[in-house]
Image 1 (tube, chains in turn yellow, red, green, brown):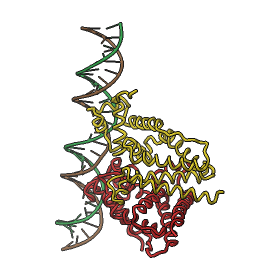
Image 2 (image 1 turned 60 degrees about the vertical axis):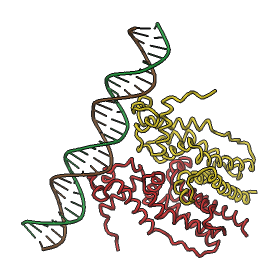
Image 3 (image 1 turned 135 degrees about the vertical axis):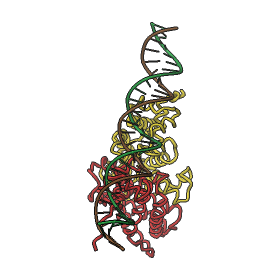
Image 4 (image 1 turned 90 degrees about the vertical axis):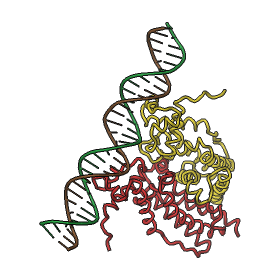
Length: 212
Length: 212
DNA sequence: GAACGACTTAAACAGATGTTTTATACAGTC
DNA sequence: GACTGTATAAAACATCTGTTTAAGTCGTTC
């Protein structure tokens, strides 16, 4: 039942995700990666992945696989109140995922770095998870507000919701400084969640008024 | 009345902000920068700025100076309704700034890159503009909701508001793909603004209920 | 016109980078 | 025990990096 011991290949990918996310793709050397993975030679990368760019792609695929296994199921057939509740749970889970789980934090940093790199693996990540997850978010939003889940306005609103969460990961250095925190731990995450769920409820409440 | 012709120094800084923002600090070479600036030698950078890191700092200072000249004044003595109106105007201006003005877009990209780089000029940017701007936002939020402008909850809420806006800049590649847009032009910015102002009003309205 | 200073260029340097090549260790198989 | 294929390591390669040094150009000043 216990998972197999991680191979060198796995160790290299894990180290690469961590370093690519922390330092950026170009700022990370293959020697750094293999050293962090415990090995002592840089040729491993080309042996296993063909090139540094191949390793980057392997990192993207590993993230996709990892996220697929951690997906909470989304129940489609829900009424408005259930959808609103699911939205809160989903956003709360995403916030925790982004700010608490160290492994996930590295993956999030990796993805954020890829967002604006034309040579990166954004296509892979988008088609493999981002689009589907966003579509689910739109579905819940549409159910909760009684509007078309795929309307342009709903899709924009879903991104706005995501943006609120993601900024506490992207802008964390600024956030912690302004708040006088030493980091974003469980206590701080709870405070953030309080504000974000209040915002979510307020937006949904605004729709209720015009809805029924 | 016309501004003086840009010096080589100015051209190098402008090119550096653009390239650092687009590619990242490490991924950009000084030869690229001087080539983009019209010059043909890389030694200019060390002549003017001492080092590549010195050029990075000069970019940060140039951004500070530029932003200072473009600041709309914030009127402090306002009632709740006026503060709410100012909030809408401010957020709308920030969204336009982030997605429409090409020069500002480069600066925004530069700042975002610096956010997570411990060796960067985040300190300079934070103390020179980020903290002050955020404090203004908190002030307006506090006035509009009748709460303490410097309470922890208000500061978090201000970051959440910012996050909604910034994500449409940070995650633009994802946003435009999911929305089927070819970019974020004036029309698209207007649609985004519609959603964000609706969210803002909803959040403020939620406070009104518990307030009076 | 000579001398100077500010600016720009070219060439060269040491170091780091991604990659390739070669060599070594070590399973399992006949 | 020799052979084979896989996995790791070491060294060498060409290229690119930031930086330095030296040379060149231009306008200004005396």
